[in-house]
Length: 432
Image 1 (tube, rainbow, N blue to C red):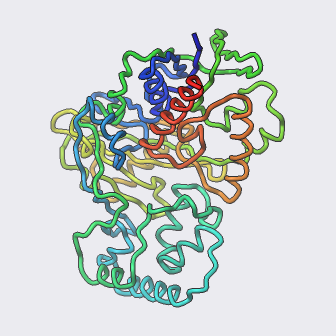
Image 2 (image 1 turned 90 degrees about the horizontal axis):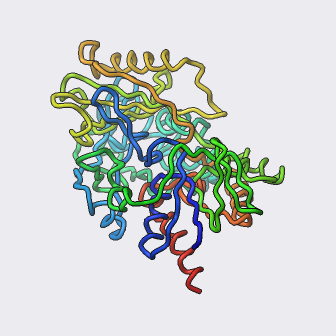
Image 3 (image 1 turned 60 degrees about the vertical axis):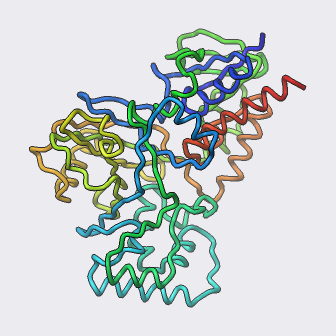
């Protein structure tokens, strides 16, 4: 009997184990936390449920959707968001909805866009160049470049551009002009629908993978992996001998867990950058506190980059008659936040109150949570260093899955498929 070890019980690990089981192969998932779910998991504060970071599904893949919806019913949401900029609220995307701004600022944005568009020979060397070609200097410098620093924790010029894809709407001058003269209802977003489970938080998308019958062990933090003798050692001093090893552990950590990893591999891993995040979770004694499913904040003196409403995603996330918000603040080794968690929590509360979102009388639940891994940062040398690390781990017999296992900008459906891909490869290999 083959011993297949899977490190991490997030969606990629669950998917890998599930698809192996469909072909009669047993595996064991080892999870350092005391429950499954990874970053798709959730937590509760006094009856209010909050996801670990925000999640929706908008997959176009029929197979993924079938699995996700096999045991869960979903709410369907239009991707309607808002933007907060210097005391003004604009519909999203801001570049198409300039109408609420003053005439002087709208003129600067539009003229800058026209001037940049006229220069068709601009060479794009980084994300800042890309933004200015798409939106002009003035809008780029005051909107997406400010947001980039808050969300990615580095300046836009420090990022490459392959990751952008269709994530940002590229408007014509006609669209910008029309949106500056009147309000309109058109939604320009990369998906027409965003879905969220009616019950149990976003974690419920995994319920269709027979999770309760998968073999999992919790509170199993890996401290060493001996790939030559194929043995995993855990913090509790227990060991596990494997024939196949699949990992969703961030590759930046993995190289330090694998015994005798060469120093040059560790150096390459240490050059990879990701963000960490604080999640500020707030609960209210009224149902109508949130006005948007989510909104972005461009003001630099307000630390959260975006705020979502768990209660608008699903009323099941809050007690009857209540509502909730969840703010995200990002940091990294390139951008540290020198505040205590208590002070950061109060900062968010005071700033959101200053935006007239709620009052002291409305707030009945508050909490702050720190997550070590949030997003992969696509700086200019990411691909070179990522390839060095992944090739080494693969050469040591480690199959990589999940956002931080493959070190990519994966959404939940893509993480699910990364687990399935490795399961399929193991099955094919055994059948040959």
